[in-house]
Image 1 (cartoon, rainbow, N blue to C red):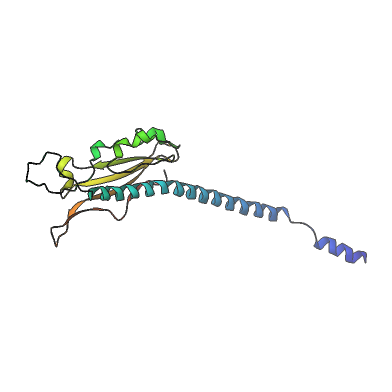
Image 2: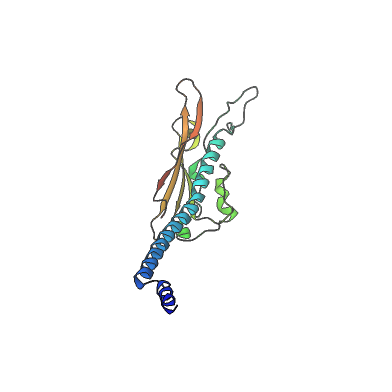
Length: 198
């Protein structure tokens, strides 16, 4: 009986030090991978703001092109004027926030007045933002309605605060259909991303 009891005690001993060290090493590796994965997931979630923002901005720019406009001058009696379409003028739009340092590793809460120059696009953000937004055109005035006029919707940010900016851009412009005389505004099907996790 005593022999049987001794055999059971020997069989029920705990783990050896080597076994415990292997378990600790495996848990450490899994924790490191989890931290990397969570960091990557968080950065991707933050950059979704920029992707959604400039996607909406590009749609707003194309929609603004189709808003009918006419010459601002007085018409002579019995005369008419043609309807014109044109892109919003990017020289009148101020970046929000004005300085990229305002979003360096932090969020910026814009004032409604920050977006006052964006009236043509009807674009604004009410929530705190990680990115600086801007809208730029390559032409001005009446040339904004002509073939070759282009716009760029931009968002840049510094999520980790290291001074290296990430940049998102979406392009669009006025073009003519090769088979007809139809002139229209379109946006690019995808955006250009430079260092998106910075």
